[in-house]
Length: 579
Image (tube, rainbow, N blue to C red; front, side, top):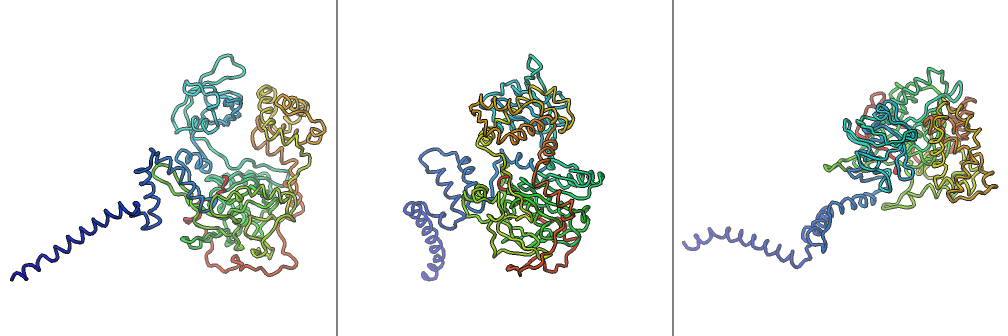
C-alpha cells in the first residue's frame, strides 16, 4: 500500500529535478563560461548578443545608436561593392535624385567664400515667384546668420529643402541693392529632369543626353523623341557618358522604344530569385530609326543594360570607351527608423548571356573603387589595345559579332580621350577650381551685359572679344598659380573652352553648355560621321569563331509581348556605386 502511494509522487519529483538541473546549469554557464550562453548557438544571434553585452558591461557609456550606424556600412561592405546602407538623414536626398522631384525652394547654388551664391532660379519654382534672382547671396535663414565655415553644401541642402508647404525666411544680398532683401518662401515640389539636353545636331540627326535613369526618364525620352521627330529627325545619338545608372525599370522601358517585338532586353537571376526575362513588347516608337549610343568609364549599371541590349541585338553601334562594369541588382529595404539598405539580390545579363560585372574582392576593395585610375595608368583611355579582354567570357551577338563579359561594355568603335593641349598649368588651375571661381565672379560683374544674348552662339561671339584668358591668368596669379607663358599657350584653346563653357552654363543653362562642348567633341563627331554614312546598323563579320560560352540569347522562348510586364526585379535599382 505504501509502495503504491509513493509511486504517485515519482513524476513530480522528476519534474522538479529537471527544473532544478536547468537552473543550476544556467547559473554555472553564465558565471563560469564567459557569458557565452546564447552567443555561440548561431552566428545570426552573435551580433545582437554582442551589442547587448557592450551596452551592459562595457567600461564606458556607449551610444548604441551611433555604434549600429557605423557598423551597418561595414557589414554590407563585406558582401560586395554595391550593397549599401543609407542613414535616415540621407535617404530622402538619395531617393529624390531618381524620383523626378523633391521639395525645396527651387534654386541652383554654389558656395563661394563661405556664402551661398544663387547660380540660377528654377522657372516657375517658389523662389522665382517671390523674386529671387541669379547672382543673389543668401546671408541669413530664418533670421539667423547663415555664412561662414558652417555653411557646407550638405548643411545648405538640408536647410533649404523641406516639406512641401513649409516656409523659410531668407536674407539676401543683391549686388544692385544697398540693404539686405527679405524673402518669405513657401517650399514646393521641384522637378528634377534626367535628360539634360535634347536638340538637333544638324538638319537630320538628333542628340539626347541622359544623366540618370529615374522615375520620369522614360516619359522625358518620349517627349524628346516627339519634339525631334517633329523636326524631321532621321537618326539619334543617345549620350550615356557619365550616367551612373538608376532604376532598372526605366532602362527597360527606354530600350523598348528601339527594339522590335520579342527581342530580349535583359534577364536577371539570383540565389533566391529565379531567372526573369524582359522582352520588347513591340510598342516602341523608334524601332527602325538609326541609333548610336555613347558610353565611357562613367557609364554604369542601367546605362550598361541599355547599351548591352542595343549592342547584343545588333540594333545600333556603341561608341566611346569601355563602360564601368556593374552587373549587380539591388533591392531597397526600408527600416522603421527611416533608414534603408540596398541589398544585392541578383545579377543581370545582357541578351547574349554575358554578365558585365567586373571582378571585386569582398570587403572594402580599394582596387575596385580606384579602377578608373588603374585604367588610366594602363593607357585604356588612350588605346584600345591596352584593354585586356577575358577570352574565356566571349559571347556572340545575333549577327555573330564577338562581345565579352566580366568588365563592362566594350564599345564597337573606340574613341580615345583627347589630351591635346593638356599641360601642368591647366591641371593646376582646374584642380584648384580657379576657372569656376573666376567665371562665377565674371558672371556676377557682367550679368546685365551678358543677359542680352539669347543663345550660346551670340554669347560666344561677345565672349571672344573680351580677352578672357589674359584676365583669367592674372586672376590665377593672384591665387598663387604663377604665369607660365609657354604652358599657357599650349593650353590656350582648352582654357578658352573651359572659361567660355562655364559662362555659357551660368547664363543659359546646361543644354546650352552641352551644345557648346559637343561642337568640338570627337566622340559626337564620330557618331555624326557614321550616321551620315548610313553605318549606324552593325554588320555581320565575315568570319566568326565559335563562342566558348553558351549563347543564352539564342534560346527559344515562348513569352512575347506580355513578357515585358513589370515584375519584382524590374522595379529594383540598377545603380552605380558612385551614383
